[in-house]
Image (cartoon, rainbow, N blue to C red; front, top):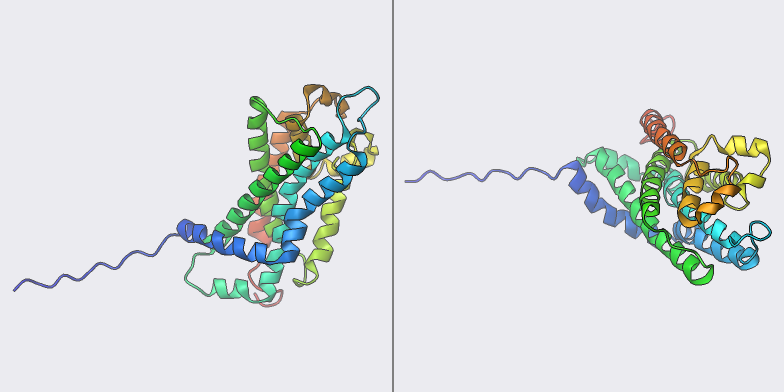
Length: 277
């Protein structure tokens, strides 16, 4: 009589496959939450339409063919990175910590890494959709010139480094709000201040020197500068403080913030509320 064969149990999915599955859950939750959809996805588009309508045809300087709308589109695309990554996560994670989502995840067999893979997937998909919409609006209504050749490569590395840095900083900063309800009141003003000081709403070389020095400490300034090199003609470098887009420096600073963000998120991220660790 043949010995019965005992089936070998299937190995559970790894952290990455489970994280990829979780991306779908994160996307559904994101777009079902109207507040998240407006503040993190539609707000840059709305700001582009408002500012573009008011200042759209105004040249950056007398005799210049570069309009403020073109300058502003580049800044809003950079801001899209900040909205979909830093602001989104710094607000959403405290809410999930409050409602017990993080505690439940911590108590399941699912690897903790899968949770972060899901968040990273959400950030990536939301950014791609948002930047596509911003470019489309800029092209149709504000004479945005699409990048070509090496500019696409610059756009790629600037987007990737910016998303990584701002995602990690959003995860690290999520421990700052004491509760989920108060998170928007803390995070949103920080994002606005960085936009005002980093050359998004105003021409960067016309900002006060102290403001330029302040914004140079943070990634948005360098991300915005890199995006201007992508979506503005080469002669627009004359409007930079140094007369150059300094792409090598932009890449170095953004990479440094990726490392710094990783360290900060590993040190400060918490699954439970304060006092419950």
